[in-house]
Image 1 (cartoon, rainbow, N blue to C red):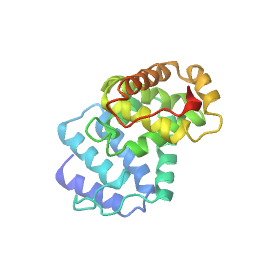
Image 2 (cartoon, rainbow, N blue to C red):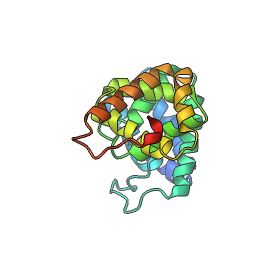
Image 3 (cartoon, rainbow, N blue to C red):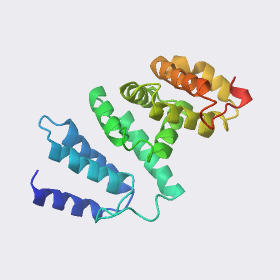
Length: 206
């Protein structure tokens, strides 16, 4: 893609109101990183699209926004991401896009969106969302810092506040055994590192 094409693409997306531009950006990102011909320039452009049009982290000049997503816009983005991943028919494409959206270098910054998306996958449930999350954990290491942060966030954001979380945890292996294994590994890592981190388990999940 030429420099002028990149500019035209961004200008086109900027004319679309957020979060609808996020949906369009996802389509372009798949073309860039999952196409038959990919390059470093394609990946760089895809990363730019993610930061500006999906996660709303930077403005058109690449400067960090002073304010992030509002709760309503975040909810709308979660709906877009949930529907999008559940409708990608090719597993390798799903995994590639997911790993790119929540890479090892951006996972901490985007942990809030990531944990809420996986929480929705547990609650609805969606084996597709849990599978891509499982692949993500395996790629980064299911006892890595990022996987452990996700596990901690899920405990705090979902299992801690959900009335039937104990029952949900019991049936989780039936929904996605691979995710359950990675999730429990990360929980175990957090548990055994409890003296090194400000982390705790609520009694109701034991």
